[in-house]
Length: 142
Image (cartoon, rainbow, N blue to C red; front, side, top):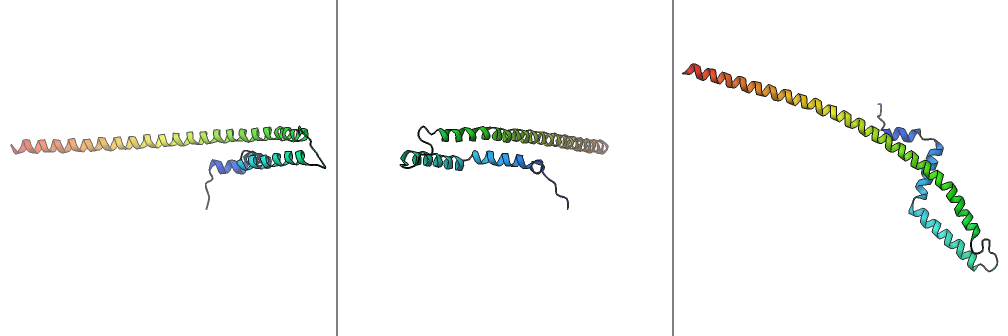
């Protein structure tokens, strides 16, 4: 039994490992879970460095933390842009598929309109025939 795959299924199957990885990273970084986790880690980092009596691995103004954020941003931005580019491509493919569906639907509607018009003309022709017969019968009976 052959299964018909949607454009979305075909597109998903065609993604490379890197594309799937970039999409999952972008999805993860764009979530509340990530924002909350990162906020907790930053507060923990700052708290431990402010109150740590013995060892400060990143004393105020937290230059190492700033470097970590810069590195994260340097990698996150292109990964998110790759994912957005793929989303744009998916949107373009979906728009093209929708356009093709609309064209096919238009053709079907036009064909149905022609059939309905033909049936309407045939009905009108029959009615006219019946009226003509009734006129002839009425004329003959006089």
